[in-house]
Length: 423
Image 1: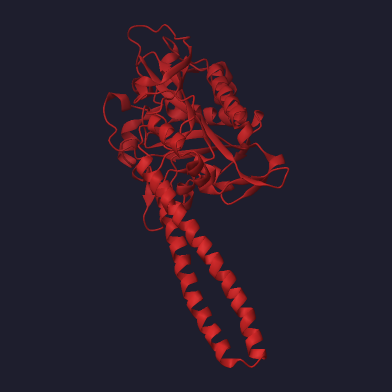
Image 2: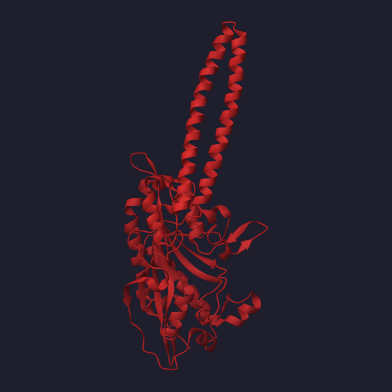
């Protein structure tokens, strides 16, 4: 959530930057400023009346001592009226604060100045390509055919048990999943991330804290009776660890990682681009999360990008890095880079990670703050990234490493899988 200080002091900058996300913020931000002005006026009025109340209270005591009963009674009557006015002003302040919050929940984060102009994914800027694309035979199979051939993943069984988008991993397919999870977690631990094992359901406050609610409510699975949501990513429970917390500057940056199952309704997902593992309703992912101070968050973001890139290099996969344009960046992110791996069998790029800096946007919702060396309390910056999401990594590994003898396992994974080939 944008801060009132930023909005009031940089109104035109905020409107201009929101326009890069194709969001017209002028009317809403103007309304916020009007409400804040009214709130401040009510606060001043309340303070003035409270001061008058205090003065009258002292006078009443003196009047009673002096035996001036009639004057004391009149003063007491005046305090009753003041209390009513103070109550009215307090309601005005509360209503204004609630309306401000309701409006700001509808306003996305402002994009970083380096975010390029653009409307769709086609306008994203390719920052880097490592195109070690394998030469596969003309009859190379897509991963859903390989999964069937080697009995690795049963999509039909998933439909029987649950529905489309919930695959069942079997045998070496299940072992490959577990190998990737352990590899990603071990690499995160080596990079200084403390592992967290969080719940996979969260309350609404957690969803609002990281910005999934109300923006993506329709994309989340909701447990109606308990009013809980299945998490779309470990970002939600892990970042919410620091909701309503004041941290010490010396403890920053905080670096956490977590493996969880992730759940996304993905309404309206149909067609060839969502076949097999390309788009699922339930999937495994390792997430990295950082809580940092503002002046260091840009460096943290670079370190996270390097970490994700290192994973793809070790997996020997062709990949590219995209700087997302204003029209494709998420509601809550200020700056985001996507990583995509190339599927030679499908002849297309598959997104496997987004690494985002939210600056103070999430922290303001979460009231995640830190106390600096001068004992001043400030908002933190929050960052997160997939390191990595498994489905499309598995798809690319199966497709790009297929040979006449079977599917080759990257060397870095062999100690985790216990086998070098799927045959």
